[in-house]
View 1 (cartoon, rainbow, N blue to C red):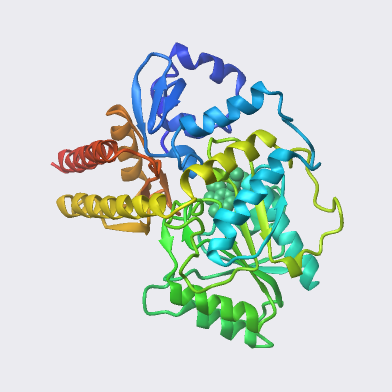
View 2: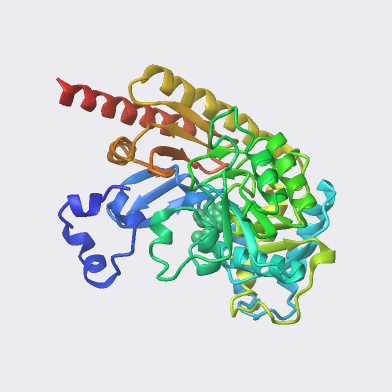
Length: 436
Ligand code: PLP
């Protein structure tokens, strides 16, 4: 991440934030603007400048900003004085979401989960998943992977690999053993077999795990994609060693990596699945921990939270299901755009071999490996100057990550990719200029 805000010498329009908001703010440093309105794939700042949004709230706005169908349902609900907040009491809004989730998401995929509404952040859904796995198995240890990102509250942070975030914990991160993700040591090393070997060895030094937690495509960790074979092998390791399999689908789910769940078609059956980000569809806070019914060992209120009944989010989440997931057409469109994205990124890589080391990702969750955080920051800066909001990920912030809305018009996707191509070429030229 580069600090354009500081570089710009904090112009007057940022003075309020400089004076009153904590230094912890981060995205604002990459995108020095004051945003005001947004529609579809477009953001507008308070001076009326338009930006294409290839960040989408880090995959929270998979259906774009302020989708009219979702917005209308919310407005109707608010205008008829629908319950806004309900702790975890029964509400019509919650019942209608659950029924839609069952009929359009779970049943067609042959899945059977109980829904636990947690506090409305992804990290809280992960906290609940880890707690439940520990409770069910009576074990403390959890296996998490290199470059995994699961949130920054203490329990979830222990599973997160990122040193920058771990460094802020103020306490040792506990109860997690790190294992190598698929491909971490290169394509020839079977990291699932390694994990099995360690767990099978009574002197391997790893306490029996309650769970193995993973992302099928690591979002913050740099768009590392797990193969179906690896996921199946990891599931077998979990079964063999009495651990639950938790898929954290907070970033890769809700259509981003392909189907509604990123593990669809991978031949695995996770015991627990976490969802948040795009679940509400409109960017409203909402998180969900899905639990195989036989593992629902919670006592009432054991994992608590005031905002587990965000009815506005239930309403828009149901509207998102009704609008996009009642048939195959939306997922087919996402697959087509994902392919177009891959082709376009590969063309950029081919034209700029001095800058781009490779193309990574799956579905509409793809990006460019540019080898260094500095180069990636230069591309983000050059893109923003040309009206494109795009961010980086990976251990060294060296992956330029395209998270365009899944609903983006083909012409806007093309336009954004042209800006990205121009930004990459600009950085390449700057490199040549400075070498000369
Ligand atoms: N898990 C994954 C895979 C994520 O990508 C994120 C956030 O980026 C989280 C968990 C944490 O979600 P939140 O920021 O809503 O706490």
